Length: 261
Image (cartoon, rainbow, N blue to C red):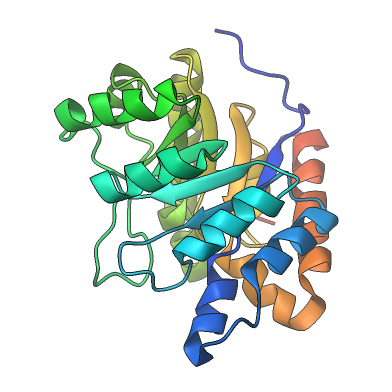
């Protein structure tokens, strides 16, 4: 399968979970995640992501209902592969569901879903969502074994975990940065060749987004915590616009050797 041209438009999905984290810290209704989603769209977001965790630590059920009702862009519903979350997805019918691993004690998602190990359970789970015309994404490591399993269970999309790459950038570990970018690039190419749409995300910031955005096989980036944090200083539309600009520049620029800049 031929890769898309490098300059092809790349979508930006904005995760608004941590607007809800701030709201829940004090209770009440402010700040409103739905308003944040609308401001992100004003800034250039192509879609909105919200993760309804089992413990409801940030997004709550009412947020999902309002997002589905009010959004003018696709809703990507992040969820664990549980019967409860499947029932919620089938009730609200988001544009897409992204299945992620979930542990109560983690601060944030720590790695990719082990699709290969969970293949027997995931295949009918994915099929039920697809039967309701929901696109199904699996958040995985850029590992050939996981990519093959994602294709086998019937996923439409894989979202490649970029967290380790971002950690290496933060630590200034040049050789590890290059190795992780190579792994992500190869994983994206393999997934694209297998007929899967390829997304990527976790930990991306203004300082490290360009090399990932430049990977031709990646059709969409999903970014949340950093943009919500940056919005405290510059506002959410401005933060999203700047991220959008960096992504577009990376798609248009000549290859720069794969290092963040």
